[in-house]
Length: 368
Ligand code: SF4
Image (cartoon, rainbow, N blue to C red; front, top):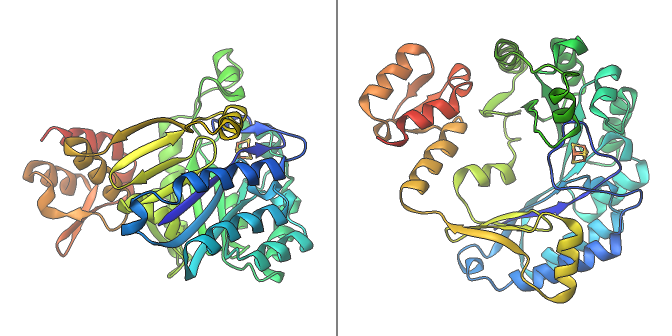
């Protein structure tokens, strides 16, 4: 089993953020732990545990999990570890903002069982961070990395956002180089998207922001692929790069179709072929937990044609790819000729140029 806990609290909303968050000056640690404990009790006897009895990975995402008190995080890790079989090499990840890293906090995370940190850096450029409404400053990143390492948390993934608006004059190669200088074991790179109900969406609607051109997106994505390959990273999923042996086991479970259990507001689960998702709003979630009500906002069975397309889409996101025989001959030939795919033994995998067109390629073969 792979377990995800959504910690929705943030100090402020970033300009581009579309996640289910609750802006709070201080985090309601006790209420949150009690709510997750209550949801865990509802879910601990789900029949899917029979097939997936052992917790292999535990991931605290958000929101900003690093704003939780370390003792609250320790309680939540203990909740899963004491109640279910917990793999001795379980991957326990926490998403962290650089400004939340202190020596005492990092030591407490490590002592609680955290084995991996996903650090939300996004950029090393002060003007870009300010435009993003991030709470941290560029000069806090390197000391945060040093502090994490000193606490024994050396397995560090760094998140960066690319395809920023031209008006910011962001130097993407410089940001990548500064990130590599920190020697992370993993990188996640996300292209900026504009969602209408975010501050960025509103700036864009009133003409204060222009959308990034597709050419810039492609140039920066392809540059990152080359730069990181030269630095020894494996591009193992569209947005993810790892040093050998350092792939995210938790995220890999999503792409492989394994069972996963999501706890907290907006968290998704996939258990024995049923996908479900919780209510999005923290206040609503909290109220329902208190009243012993159902926390799910919806669910669907993933089967038939939908399952085939989803499996194709997820497998093509990764460097594992799909068996060559799963693709119609015409599409296969077109993709290979265009340089969007390569064949290695029995498998076909997309190239970075192919990943740039992933949605269109999957849509084109969806009805075949
Ligand atoms: S820290 Fe993350 S979750 Fe919180 S507002 Fe910023 S992007 Fe959204």
